[in-house]
Amino acid sequence: MYRKLVLDNGVRVVVERMPTLKSVTVGIWVNVGSRDEGAGEAGLSHFLEHMFFKGTRTRSAAQISREIDALGGEMNAFTTRETTTFYVKVLDQHLRPALALLADLFHHSRFGSREVEKEKQVVLEEIRMVQDDPEDLVQELHAKQTLKRHPLGRPILGDRETVQAFTREQLLRYVHAHYHPLQTVVAVAGNFNPKELLPALETAFGSFQRSDQPGLSRWPPVVNGGLLVRQKPLEQAHLCLGLKGVSLGHKDRYAAHTLNAMLGGNVSSRLFQEVREKRGLAYSIYSYLSSYADGGTLTVYAATRPREAPRVVELVCREIRRLRTAGVDRQELERARNQMKGSLMLSLESTHSRMSKLAKDELHQGRYTSLEEMMAEIDRVSEGQILQLCRELLDLTCLAVTVLGPVSPRAFRGVMD
Image (cartoon, rainbow, N blue to C red; front, side):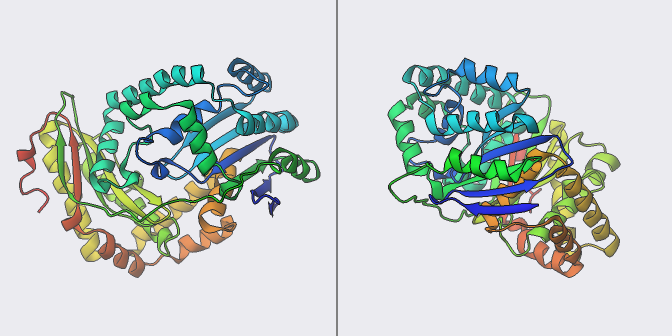
């Protein structure tokens, strides 16, 4: 059972009852992320996500932790380039106190100056952790390379200089500017009594007000090509190869995900079979789509022995050329469609994933998309549609290659031609 209502203040509420389960997940999604940060604000969306858990008018950070543990639940948050999300997952009988706790954090967090200074050190450690993880680091470098100065190319965590300079007043201004009822979606999925839940949501979020109108200054990204080599003493060379992708609402988004599945999205994909299974050149190789409101990228990641890095790049380019020239056959397409449908159904078996889908549908499409509709869209993807999409996206003259490891840029001369 799906239902949507809009509170008087503009907050959108989307709920889906799953009566066979014993859990329920509540999520608050705000339409603001790292791409919305201005000069001197890099990492501010993510930093704020941390600060919401550091105490309210009536609860300390320790009390918040004790209360959610006493409910046997999970409460957390995450920041993307376009959204910030706070959620709680509990057994259905604990929904009311969990909702009250989550609403208290969202409305009444204090952002104390002392807590701000302490949390800076936590986030700086998080940034150092990324720097020590080559798979994360090469993808961060790749985003900067492909999107250049566009805000989508910045790290979600920000950088040391901006994080160290954050002030309480800066956080409060950012919340006031971006945390607006019209930019907020509350999503609930799981086992609940609608007659009790909907009045509770009205109580929790109906008084949320901002006097001014929200405003997002966003512009489409441009994907740039070229080669970037960051030398670092590692056991492997870590590679990212990037091309243009599709936006979240693109008419061919289902075809793009099908194409990604065939390229490197699963264990039967062309890259996994060719690079890992046939030649043993990599343990980890995969591709993925990064889609945003107004654009996107298609990325291939691989890790291999440094001397084999040019060969892996060459093999990826060869498979891309084959797709662009010949497309795919019916058997390969059918296998990819079946894999996608199976993965989709399995991924939506938890209340957390259903909650996320509800919110994303509302934020990005403005409406609910049923599982049956999604299955039908996947089945409608054709060989001709895939070939046309390959010719639009898989243009190697725009290929961006990022390399992290003990490799010289000279090793890639001629490989990308």
